[in-house]
Length: 446
Image (cartoon, rainbow, N blue to C red):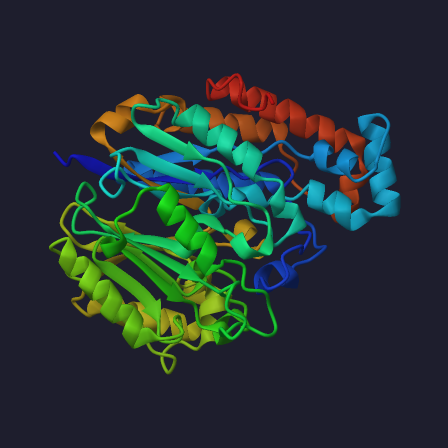
C-alpha cells in the first residue's frame, strides 16, 4: 500500500454559474460574455467527472462554492440598504461590479491555493497558501473564504499548516496552483516543486507580455517557497513565454501540466525551454528520480488550437501501474490537430497510455477545463485520515449531491437575472443546505 496518495479536490460549480466575461486575457471566458449559462448542467457535469475518477480509484474530493453575491464587496464600494436594495442599486449604477460580486470563478480551485506536501516541507506538514488573485476584482475577494474552507477541511495543526494570502499588490500577484507543479517518483517521496511565473516585478528590464497581463510574479512564487519551507535545491523557477500569454495562455496550466515524473508541455510554454528542462533534470536527480518530458511541437498543435481545446488544461494522473492517464475535455476531440496528436500520443508507447474524455462544456465556456477545476493535494495516509471526510467523493455522497443540485439550481441564468433579488436568496439557501450535507456547519460563518 502506498504511503501517500494524490487527491484532486474539484470545485463544485455554484448556483450562480454565469458568463460575465470578467477575465481579460482568458479567451474562452471573453468569447462567451453575456450569453446564458446553465448552472444545473454545469454542476452535474462536474460531479459526473468527480464520480468517474473516484470509481477508477483516484483520490477525489470537492471544494464547495463560495457564497454569492458577495455583499461585503458591494457594501464596501458604497451600495447601501437591504440586500435587495444593494442589488438593485448595483445593477443600475455599476452592473459590471454586480457581475464581479456574482462571479462563479471560485469553481476554478486550481487558483484557490498553492499546496506543498509534507515530503517537501521542512516541518513535515502539508502547507497551504491561499492565492491573493489580485489581478482581477472579481477574484481578489476569494482568498478569505478559500482560507476558511481549507482550514475547516484540513484543520489538524499536527498535519496541516495554513498561510494567509500574500500582500495584495502587483509585486506579489499570486494565482495559486495554476502556476505550480510538483514532480516526483512516487507521491510519498521528496519531490521537486516547479513554479512558473509571468513577470518579475523588481526587474524593469525583464521580459513581459505586451497584450495581456502576466498574473504571477517571480517574487510571489519565491515567497510561497519560503513560507512552505521548501528545499532550494528541489525548487525550480521558470518564466512562462510572454508570447503565449499574449495568445491567451493566462496561466501555465493552459500550456503545460505535470505529474509524477512526466512534464507534458507545449514547445512554446517557457521563455527558455532548454534551461527550464536542465534545471528540472538537476532537481529531479537530487531526489533520485528522472524527468520524463513529453513535448508537443507547434507544427503538430498550434498554440491557438491548444488554447481552444484546453489540451494542456488536462489532468495528468499517475496510475498504479506507473503509467499515466490524461483527462481531457470533449473539445479536444473536436479540434482536428489536437485529436490527431492525442491519437498518436496514446499509440506511441510513451508514459501516457490512456485518454479519459469528459463533457465539461459549461465550465469550458466559462474559461477553464479539467485542470482549472481541481486543486491537487498529496496526503499521507495519516493526513488523509485526519482531514474532514465529508468532502470525499463516494458512491453514497454522489446521489445526495445530485439531488441537492436538482433541488436548488436553475436551468438557465441570463445576465439580467443577476438583478433579481430572488437569485441571491436561492444561492444562500442552496449553500446553507450544502454546508449541512457536507457536515461543515461553520463553512460560511465569518
